Amino acid sequence: MKRTLIAVFVVFVVWTVVDFVVQGVILAPAYTTTPQLWRPLEEIKAGVMNFMVLIAAASFVLIYAWLINEKSVKTAVKYGVLYGIGMGITMAYGSYSTMPLSAGIAFWWFTGRLIEAVAAGWLIGLIVRKQRKNNWVPFGMRERGDYIKY
Image (tube, rainbow, N blue to C red; front, side):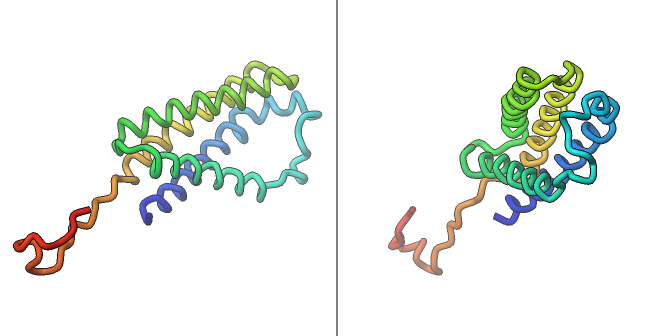
């Protein structure tokens, strides 16, 4: 459980950094061309955004930790790719289909989500491992065989 909590924190930090680079650096000029779509900077709900990213990071990590049996970096990266494609397409191009966004904004939203998910997959593959079962048996009972195997 400790590794899972560490993974949630690490994914949250990585996603926050990538979001800053994509939203605050790469897309900042593009956002100025559509000011009617965005809150003014002083009205942005940073606390809500951070909470949302934390919940998303926890969900991402817990799906891997609790539901995926084969724990490896390779499996985690595959999971990240699939998650990134699914979330990136729906968020980026779903918004593009209903809002007057440029194709460039949609592309970078998709690319950012994919980069975040693949990076997070790689990281959780390194951090979250399959838990070993405790094979502890009271002294002397293993030799006699009078213990219950689970």
